[in-house]
Image (tube, rainbow over all chains, first blue to last red; front, side, top):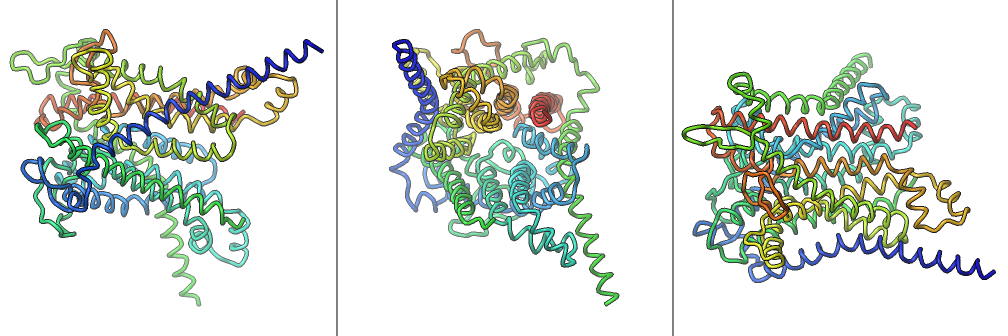
Length: 294
Length: 297
């Protein structure tokens, strides 16, 4: 009797200890980060304004805002998206709808995993060798966007595959039974039913492309490029451009005597863009899960 | 009717071959990456490249006037030291957090933590580098009284925070894959949850956890901007965590812009790229095989 209560007390004690230790481990990696992000915001606060976003950098980056890098990032993201989305979605369609489980699809899946694992700087070397030099695109928005597109392809493939796999087989069978071809089934039934999942992947791809620095450093992004303020189509496809991530790197490492708030402002805008875009993906996913019909 | 059918078949075949093409695109791109990086580095690789010096000499003087030396041992040591420190920090915390998320918390907390971790994973590497430069650098200087805070410690901390989300999310998947009957059987025997974790879950999920760690290593080895900004720029073999180092990735990022196209220096940087490609390829392949191994059982 006495023995049993002591044992159960010890059990409860060890339970609490285990829970606390693992909770502490989790909080120790989450909390510092919350503090760091709060600190970045605190330092950036004085400079954050509409004017900061909409003016070009002046006086060798020491004044003005971040309009040109912001616009450059927008260009890179949109073009890489336009290239990567169709290829990625179709690749996922192939893997999920057409291919059987063979050694060949295994190799494709392996290639996707490895493509995701290739270091970003190696993607930069590839972009330089293939697009800038071999394809004679030169250092340009196009070359940088293509590099980004290939780099972010696995993100789209993975999430589209997941979305397609969640469409029940019965939907396809019903469609085949009324005489639709494979592609008709995919176009009219499978893709519409997985569109939110695909969209989530696309959004994640945007956030990844917006944040990357190394792949665009040598393929199209430059230290400084003068563009007119307030014009949306200021860059051409074969121009070089500034980019937010690259701008943060250059001003925080290569420009001396910088007003302190400037790099913090840039970092917070970049971080803000990426986090907002990711939050959108999360909201979409939660919404999707809540109204799923099957 | 007849013509419409033929038209339809034509469209169907065309679309199908397009889909097949996109399907194999990933393979094409992986080969393309290897091919083009190799192509740029090949010139020097086949003439004058000295593999012994390359791998065993710590002397990296690519722009020396009198005696050019391309030894990457110090750079490899830099990558290894930063990665090792990052993993020493990230593996226990990452797996601890994965255990907490998967076994110890309620559904509400679980959702919140998973979203937080996902957002952590989204922070761009250049922002991490910036954090290393502006937050950790002065912090390390003040805490340890060292003249410069851009060290192995700084880079290791940044990389640890960067690779923890991967380890947590994949580790959590691995724990989720352990059948509930294992937990029920153990709990029925009256074990504590502590024992459950150590004696049942960790052994059962060890392959998945190993894969999680490997993918974390892959991420840490390949990371560029964060280590470029956070580890200082000293090409030397570190003797303590307070030494500045330079990694393989950071070397390419820092020097490619200044190396004239097709010069020896430029080609050696591409050879480093090939080396990085192979390292991450092997790490990812191993992780994949380990994961497949679980599924087959």
